[in-house]
Length: 459
Image 1 (cartoon, rainbow, N blue to C red):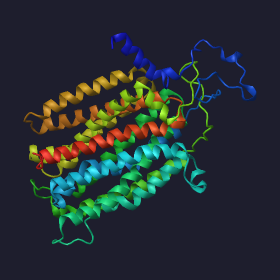
Image 2: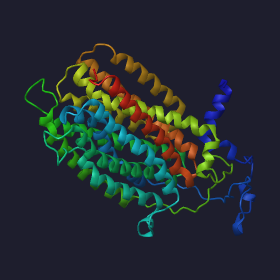
Image 3: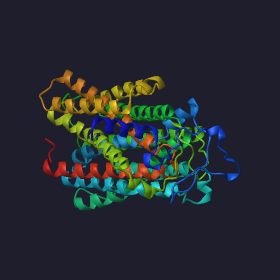
């Protein structure tokens, strides 16, 4: 692909859901088109006709309300990705292969659940008593319930087990709680992501909502790390994480559950989901007319695969660095266990600063998404090279800072490209996010297991 073709492809991603589904009516005078009495736009064979629709947008309060709708998930995800492996290996004393297997079970469950939840959410399959609040909010609520009743058990000891219990029984004890947690987590994630394109048709508003969403994620992570910095403080300078810290992880899980529920209640109070018309509307970014996108239609377009791979690699970089950063801190640099909370906190504080910067409308209009993605890739690769060297404490702080900057930029740009691709084809938006997350979670789970098998001591 030459430079002109690449530029036109990226521009197409930013301005329309899918170019081949756009009619050549860019110069159409919409004031002279009769859309009364059910008159519809010209459409392709095999697709449903679409009518014009007013551009939707959100208020500032709704932006903030949307942004905190994933806060509970972010609290749980912070503990899951940052501390599950070290909890299983250092506190519960499971073999690294079993710890990696439990992580793999969780990621595979999440990978399978995300596209299924996406399809079910798009088709509003829940009972009317729940679904009447909206197809996205109802699945968000169901996922919240599942997370609440399963997550505290993930970071608790095996209740029926004793010191003489076979390790395999311990693994079996955790599997159902991990699976329920991941199904609930997927339901919240997919419903929340797809809700964004239902709320607003304006690209700058979507970018701002993405930035606020990630800003809330940063705050959630910082709160978790601050909590662990307090819980893991020790009078011994070189103390390390061990079985004596089991109660600290249990208490942290209970705190995250309580705080997450309180914030989620505010999200439900601030957001009212628009009713789906069952039809797609005019593209808000041009005068072109878009067609209804069924979930199966996405597989016919190369852009779907390109952006899916981009999102997968972005999440792979973010999550793998988050999972193994604590091992790098405690083993490679021989720092005390408090730094397992302090260094990740530095990363997410830097993430918050970048997110606040990108959340300004005039800023995100200036920085194109492809430029942000390139910046993130350069920073991420450079930082990984730096981590291979022997570094002192000051350099560790700088590494932590750059990790946060690259994570934020990667995620905001990849989510922005995904939202622009979906654009106003919101009837299948949840499936798109589900498919993206399927690749994300499956690749992460396989990667964790490979690392645990190749280097079980994480040295």
